[in-house]
Length: 184
Image (cartoon, rainbow, N blue to C red):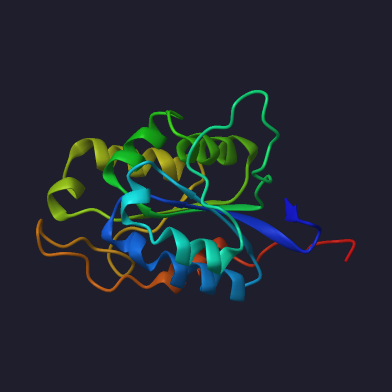
């Protein structure tokens, strides 16, 4: 739950969306709020992520693949999980209980462990109107996941219009204060 006993660990899961280009900025906000950030990308998230910038901002490698059984565990347990951006695919897979990537498996474990999990969707209006997406958001909320979606929080744009300026500080605030670390 803490990195070397100093700060609570946040798993920052990044999916394949243009908002992923702002991940280093999000890392800065999370670190300023008291989190030690472990970046974890979906396979498509890697395509949108500035990996060197995120690794420099966190001091951690971007994890994106499962380790082999004979390899040591390198991802510390989290005190919080933030999925930002969360794509249509990730939201639906997560609600269905799928863990077919390292990123999804770690988020699913966080939910199962009762760790605070926040999901910040990044979709367009056509995807947002799909019944599976609407149902998935409801299922995640019912499971105790903080879902940052709706009027005053995040409203998608039409397809092809790009994303309007998403307030990254909203995602960090939704996590709440990091838990106190004892034994400093």
